[in-house]
Length: 260
Ligand SMILES: [Zn+2]
Image (cartoon, rainbow, N blue to C red; front, top):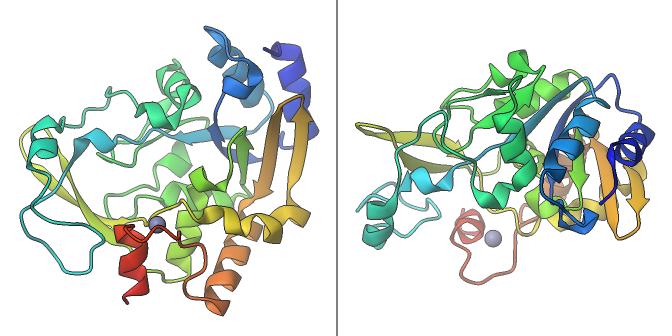
C-alpha cells in the first residue's frame, strides 16, 4: 500500500488545496492494509480545504404496508426486513458499502456527523456545509459545497457511487422519492430521497475534459468540479429525460421515473 508521502503527493497533484471536497473511496486497489485508512484520510484531508463523505445507514429503513403511488418501492413485502431495522443513533456506524474511509472519517476526533437517519454525512472543517442538511433537503451539503467551488474526489470508484449526481438530478427536477426510517421511538418520513445510481457512469465522457486524474499502478484518483458536474447532468437530462437511468428491468426507482 502506498505510504503517506506517496498518497499526499498524488492528492496534491489534483490541486485542491483551497477547495472543499466530497470524497468516495474504495481502498482495496491500494493493496489495503489494517490502519491504512487513517493514512489515506490524513493524506486526503491535508490536501484539501475541507472534507465530507457520506455515512449513510440503510439499515434504519422500514417499508410501510401502504404509501404514496409511483414511489419506486413495493409496499408491504418487507415485513422481515422491517423487523431487522435498527433505530438511527448518531454513533451508528456507516453501512459497510460506504467503505472503510467513510467510517474512518466518522470516527475521527475532529469530525462532525449530521443526524439524517438514512443519509447522514461526516466531515472535517465543513460544519457550515453539513449544517445545510435538513430532513427535507438531505443532499443540501453537496449544494453548499458547490457554492464554495467544491469538487468531488473519486478514489478507486466510478460514478455509480457519485452521490453528487443525485443532487444534480434534483436540480434537473427529476422525481425524488419518499422513504421511512426508524428512530428510537417512532418512524420518520424522509422526503426527497434520491433515485438509483447504477446508471451514472453514462456521465463519464461528458465531464472527462473537466476532470483531473492521477493513476497509481492499479489505483486511481479522479476529481471533478461540482458546478461543471451539475451542468452536465442537467444538460443530459434536458436532452433525454431518461438519461443516467439503469437498464435493469426490475429497478423500481428507475421504472418509477420512466412511468412519470
Ligand atoms: Zn435503476
